[in-house]
Image (cartoon, rainbow, N blue to C red; front, side, top):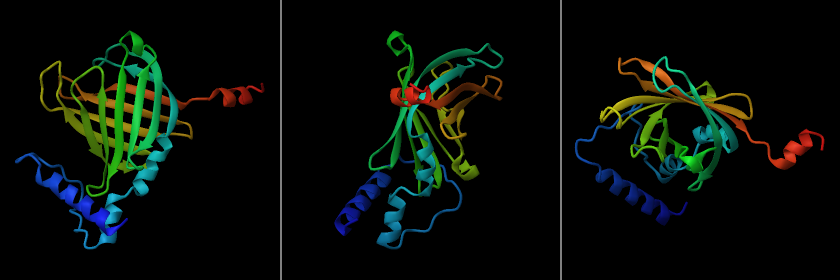
Length: 215
């Protein structure tokens, strides 16, 4: 990275930090990191690292089986769709595109951005869809060598009008070619319940499927 480009990035970053809304709470994760004292240390914080490599397991095209529990104890609703995940922005963010199989008839279409904040030391997951105008913004640590990631956040709840309704995502990477995404929500009683479970299996491309079938 050239000195001029690095200086531009530092200037942009400082401007964004300086423009934060006064009084906005900022969540800290772990100990406060030391300031970057040289160009090499700053470049490392600006670049994808080991935790970004944990996310490589999510890359590709997936068949997604979705189960939804609208309320605690309610009967589950099932549906399906496809997910496509790729690195964007020079490998800094994963883009997740989800399309329900009935998206043309009002089904869910969603967009997720997944990454890792090198300064705060936690993963970040932002979700937007065609169902709500409220974004789900969350962050949290990974465990098991990056195979499990729990991300907590709050969002505006259209049903209750609550401005900071708590929720939690859990990403679990299983055997190669499988991973799950679960959404835990806060019930009216205040307890947590699993609201959505998405089981993702790697899609078999036509050539691979034919080869596996011996055709």
